Length: 96
Figure (tube, rainbow, N blue to C red):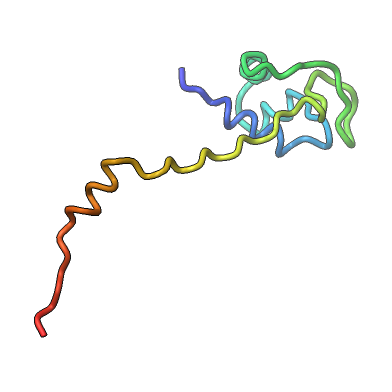
């Protein structure tokens, strides 16, 4: 089974007003609430009763418990192999 937790978490953030019902997340993903609950539980996201703007109370995630997106990892610094490639790369010169 593929790890779709990044997609579930991104959808959770997208639909939150300010809280998010599991049923709304599931509908946006085209899946069922059991799958959404499993992914969020595995990710350590607390699930409780919440009220979404314009909706009643249902099982979901409170705004304060919605994880922030992870920042992309910075590129690693150049290593010895990168330096070696720069040093041995032939230069091209045009005859004058």
